[in-house]
Image (cartoon, rainbow, N blue to C red):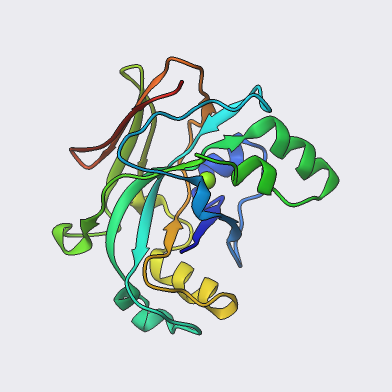
Length: 204
Ligand code: MG
C-alpha cells in the first residue's frame, strides 16, 4: 500500500506557513508504508530534527483500484475515513523548500504517519461538515472543519488517479487545518473526529 498526502488544502494553514494558497491543483507528496504507526503506539521523536510538527488530518481509505477516475464517480473509491497525523520535520522541510528540493526527508520518515482505526463513511451525514481536532496535553491545538477544504475528496481522488493508480488499501491524507506546532518528548496527542476520540498516543 501507499500513502498519498495533500499539502495546503486549508487556506489558513497555507497562510500560517507563508505559503501560497493553491487554486488549480493541490500539492501532492507520498509517504512509504514504513511511516505508518497504528494502535496508538508511541511516536519516537527522531534525533535528526529539532522541530517536528503535528498536522492532524482526515484520512481516506481507498476501497478499489482505479486510474483516471472521473470526479463524478470518485466517491465510490473510498468507503472509510479515519484520522491521522502527518508528522513533519519543519526544519528539514524549510531547508529543502529553500533549495526547491523534494520533501521526503521531512515527511516520509519512520513513524511519521500515525493513523486511527477507520469508520464507514456512511456513518457520517455530510462529509463536508465534519469537525476534527487535535489536543496536545489536554489543550486544543488544531480544530478544523471539512467545510474549509480547498480541494474536496472526490477532486483529490480524480486528480491523483490521473497520475498514480490507486489501489485498495491505499491511504490519502487530505491536509491539515491551521495551528500546526512543535511536539516535544512527553506530549500526549489526542485526535477527535466529531465527538469520537480516534487517536491517543504519546511522543517518546
Ligand atoms: Mg499535511
